Length: 334
Image (cartoon, rainbow, N blue to C red; front, side, top):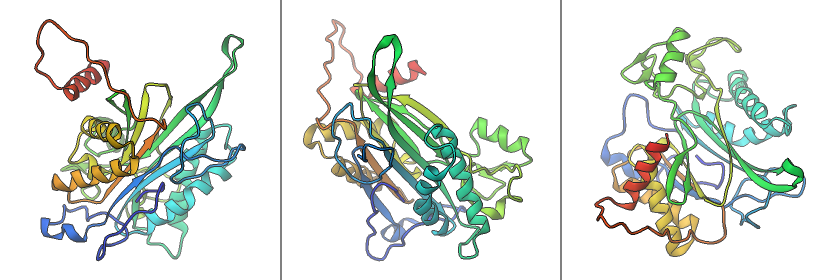
């Protein structure tokens, strides 16, 4: 479920919620699985600090007005994902830390949404959702008596959705998948008295962070292995940053980050249409036998298509693709 664009639901499919934790559905159930293709260029808002989410065009590369793009992937029913999608932006903007401390405001909003599900009498408190939000906003550089505007991007993630930056053809992951068997998450889980069995938190849930799922949590405010608190990554956007891909785990289960970036860049160079790119990502994932919910959001940072990359000629003939070169460079940078 994406917060950027209303998802399309094929006839006969459900409106949300992922498959049961016990396993993926059989292949013949694929036609009834909800999948959606979402796309957005940077959302433009008014001159004041208001936020908007949707598909709007980028005014200029130096536009500092904010945009907000969330993606939610529900499980155990649709209640949690629908509730968070409807309320998360309100919780952020109403927080006392907004807009002076975006990170604190977003962290507080995730926890507030989690507690609201626990307190609700109309929602299934056992329903849960992962959440990834991207906030793009402007700032000023006042160093050396200069007054330059630039854009920053703040990614908040709780769960296994992923945000990947396309940087001149190279994939840069801006979030970490919160899987229970991840070393950092496993250590946190075990320190709080939880266990990881066969890749599942307490043998039940395939993610280590989520909003909702109160059948796996203690009382409000208590520390427990399953947490709604997000991890953050903030970057300053440059001319090399061409686009952003946001997707739920159904996409990344069958496609690497570099593969997705290479595919989107090639498509943008041909037709410069992010909506077509997001649809092609979903189609490609289905071709690769994805049996989970699918959401793909493509955010372009420029009105122009990506430029052709000039590859220097070497005397020694190489036998590695451009995608392979980018993957190698990314590994060396890490």
